[in-house]
Amino acid sequence: MVRILEITAGLQKHFINTLRVSIFIVMIWIGGLKAFQYEADGIVPFVANSPFMSFFYKHANDIVTTSEAKEIQAYKMYKNPEGKTVKQNIEWHKQNGTYSFSYGLGTVICTIGILVLLGIWFPKIGLAGAVLTFGMSLVTLSFLITTPEVYVPNLAGDFPTPNYGFPYLSGSGRLVLKDIIMLAGSLLIMSDSANRILKENRLFL
Image 1 (tube, rainbow, N blue to C red):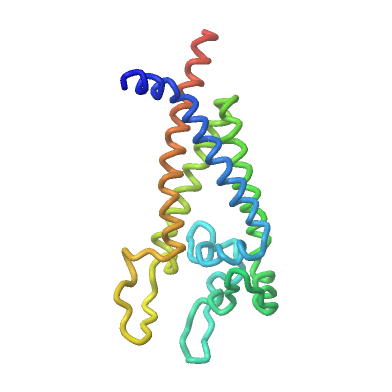
Image 2 (spheres, rainbow, N blue to C red):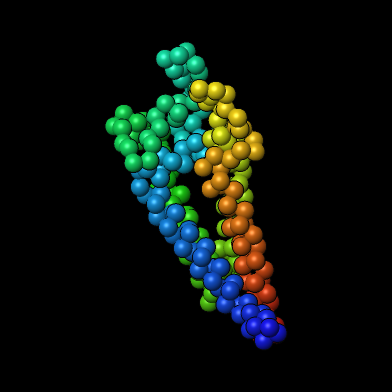
């Protein structure tokens, strides 16, 4: 048993690099998907309600009136469910800047993923990637405060909705919450990169 613990302890460096590879895979995959219409449509509620990102959209703050005389944010009228495309909705998103923003965001996410991966060989680059990952995770987690869609809505039906609002996370909310793991991982990589940089500097002193 002691030998197993010693082996496991000795693999710490490799485990941290596995974390780097894992973050790289997530970043490249998710970032790459930002080039596709369904993914760009899917992030609209997060961006439109975010104080850090809403200015990228031209119609983020527009309010429209529904046929039931209810005022809602404009983007809610032009949702494309995953797997379905509606021409009118797509045209609205083009004018809103939904797709151009998504392309830019995807490029940034992929770049961060590459920086994190390069940290396996270049600690200074890896440190930059870890810091950016930490910042991105903070912004993502802020959606739990700014985006109504992360919680189950009170839509009622045959009887009142039993569980809605905080703390009842919707599918979107559960995905956002998982970024707390990404945040913790970025801190671990940040610390490892800093230690390696310090060791390298001592070698040259």
